[in-house]
Image (cartoon, rainbow over all chains, first blue to last red; front, side):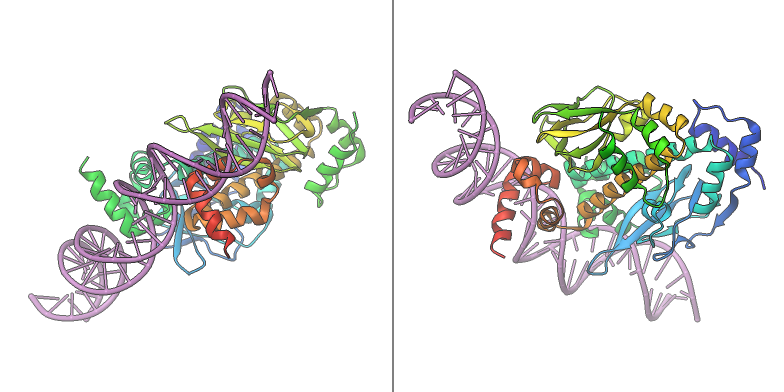
Length: 195
Length: 195
DNA sequence: GTCGTTTCTTGTCATTTGGCAAATGGGATC
DNA sequence: GATCCCATTTGCCAAATGACAAGAAACGAC
């Protein structure tokens, strides 16, 4: 296994924290390389989520509402750690599906292995915490923008921060991610493009 | 300091995990008792957040949007751990204020002390992780309900899960928490009460 | 209690968004 | 090319929500 990109990602994530090379090499043993083809699932509803350090690719998380419509809950770009928090950490069956929008590459592990890693490389806990905090912060900001931004502002923000997504995801998925219907998104886009 | 309620809370939070009494006593040394009167601030914008295990009381977190309106971001009931994740863990100045809606009692610590505690009582990390995960899960659910529920459904959900809040917080704060104006909430309530 | 401030409700009207259906467009397959 | 399928756009109308202002009610200071 080529561990260099994994080790690089770990160091980047906690730059203030110096993990020695030996620990990093040991850390890598707890992961396996994973590649997903476009359309493959990283997680299926009902299963337990794993822990995927994704260095290349784009993923989409989605679930279904009461009337059976698909709701896109998240888009993951590269260089993110992908897991469904309740399922992974609390052992619950996932309510989300996570599917590859493009070919994806990264490193995968599961809950038991990650805990084993926390024991054998205690410094790695710092990474685990940083990741959990980072994803939590991202979700908080998303919630805030749902509360105090208009659909058009949320659309503009997505274009700014994650423009690539428009290349890989159909607009109806982006619409439900933004909390509006595809019809409304279409109108928002028409207004937006005239500015 | 009366450590019994704190120790009880820690055990309740990670029931599957057995921390011996000695460690729990040592843990308590890293906290101080804190009482807030109604109207007092637990956190002010610009400061660094602490870590407050609140056993009694209600808190409200809020910030301001671009036009200066107050946005209520969260209501905390008792038996929750209260911290602003980005500020506490990443050391950023808080963008939120957190204010007591009632008299509050609990145990308080800061980032340095909590890290010291993680070193001297490694089992306590399990508590830290459980808390982070729990709060993250709560936020995810909130985001999801903003996306795929109507204002009336969100209102009904809040009544079900956190009815006490209506006793302590004015409706305009509840309105901004739900992502609507106070005017709309008033109308939603009128409709809702006829059902 | 009185006064003044804040909160809550209501009315009116504008804007945003949704629901539905039809038209358009692009891509895949044969 | 013809056909089919799906995504997207558009039109029409309804429902939800916002903005603003006025009045009623609740609350706090004195």
